[in-house]
Length: 104
Image (cartoon, rainbow, N blue to C red; front, side, top):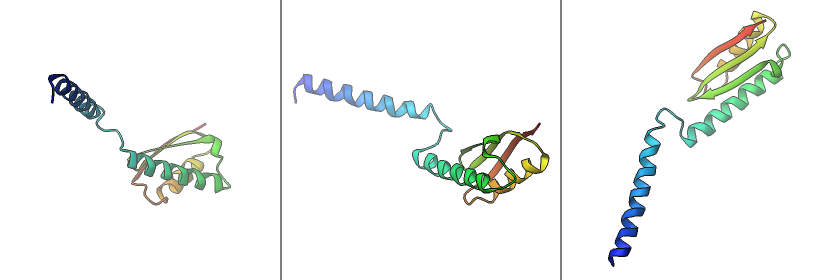
């Protein structure tokens, strides 16, 4: 192997090592698999909210990270806020629910 090829190989290895170590700087973020699972959970929670006659999907925002569902938005009554939390908790895969719905 010539010196030029060795230099190219070493440079490529350093670039690869640098990009892999940069991933460590984003610790606490989800893996691709977690993201897919969380997206599925979000979809199931939204489907439950849409199918519930007492709730309006336009009032309730749903986000999921690491199987923790966060509800946000504004609802008319405390019962609606509690109902949305109950629906989210009953979705398979949900570990916990942060119900940040505000009664207006």
